[in-house]
Length: 255
Image (cartoon, rainbow, N blue to C red):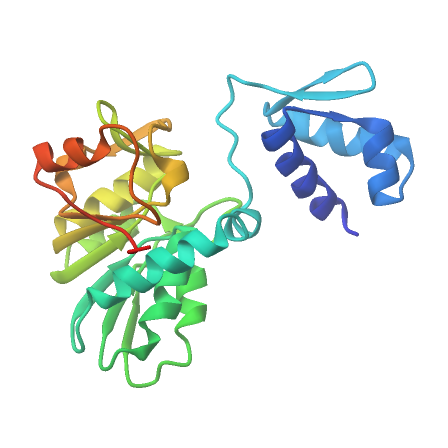
């Protein structure tokens, strides 16, 4: 196993368990404790964890951003359910924008049953997923490659997106909060999603239930900026009232 793979697994364990032990990780990976310590040194350099005697603990003040491939494997069942619902909202021949979220990859896959779509995206993963759709028009936003994520960001992406008028945008986020709104991990990602929203007639937020009542660093927009929220199960608490009061339709699978 490569060092990066070990570190990704350690990050996942830190997020779920809040702490890791060197001896346990050594047995799990079949490597020396010294190798595990070097992995922890690398992780702690990024500020997401702090070393303690015999291991490390999650830095609760850090906004831990897991690698894209690791995030893509989380909540797969929920993302597939959301993707199927979102795809049903798209008609043949429409112009659709997809962001660079892991959910968008599942949406792209679900859209393949449609005919003659035009898709604009800043996601390298979505571009690869749709490479075999020869009867579609698939357009890259352009932009600079984001460090650690298969996403195109920056001024070039914003300029490109401003030149389109899409029927629908399907996008995701890191958090949805009744007061803080729709949020993401960084300004760079938020700005691209804002540009996509401005260029699209119908805005569809695809967010699984783990995103509700969470707040990430950068605000994308108020909840009312979305026309439709697609999620994997009926939202708990007062969420349905929140959506109704903001004029947002909430769609989820019928059990």
